[in-house]
Image (cartoon, rainbow, N blue to C red; front, side, top):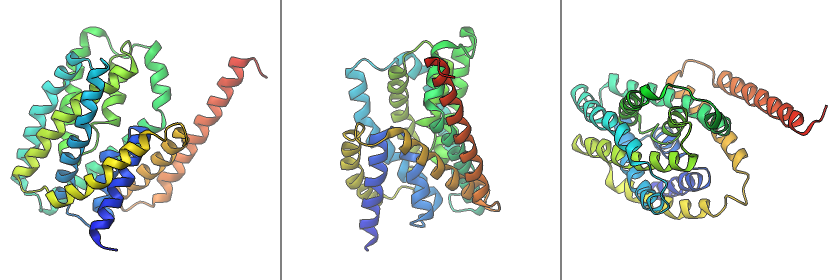
Amino acid sequence: MPIEVGYIIAGFAVGWLVGLTGVGGGSLMTPILLLFFNVKAAVAVGTDLLYACITKTAGIFAHAKLGNIDWKIVGTIALGSVPMSIATTLLIGKYGTSSDAMVESIKFWLGIALLVTSLSVLFRHELTKSAKHDSHIKPKFTPVATVLLGMFLGFIVTLTSVGAGALGVTALLLLYPRVHITRIVGSDVAHAVPLTLVAGLGHASLGTVDYGLLGMLLIGSIPGIWIGSHMTHVVGEVWVRNVLAFVLVYVGQKLAFPELNQLLGLGLLIAVAVIKQIVESRNAKIATGQP
């Protein structure tokens, strides 16, 4: 099979997952390019950043039209993320995109980001319910915490292309428990576009964007996103999320801790998923008055 067709298929698969679950863009595209197509680490990250920027731009218009964007949150988080993205780009340029140290750093932090993302994917619904009732931080500290979150996202997204979606939404749910989930998601998408644009242009200035590869990924992902978004009532979204979490753990451990057996990470996540299911079943019985 020609490598170009493989890129288009990968773009379609990732786009389908994004359309179906809202998760999977950077979390899967960069690891796929690294592990299956042997694309250089920095090029995989840089190309995926512009890919994410283009695919999420349409989301801004959709969410803005529905009034699902809190521009104050977007501005506050961007205050930390954009300057940190620029600083991280300068750091990457200083050490060289092809140096062994930079390649290993990208793989390690990418693996860590995927492991954390897997937990946010697995426990998204629980976090959503918790955020409706509990305040996890005092309101007077929320702006500072949001800027610090932006700084973390600016670093991790620029270095790995992962985190603008699942990690951003999860953190914002904890910081803004009184903001509706749709506005959290819309604000996260609105923030992801300028962040991935700045980070992507930074990588472009370093020569780590493959525009031909970017075009092929978009050819596959655009119809994939459309089809996935129209299958949310056909495919069990919860099951897809659980499978996606397992994949992220396997890939994340493989990248961050290649010396460990991947079965350890999968076994741990399966145990967490089983415990989660038992607790949910017990809570459901209590709610319905069953013994």
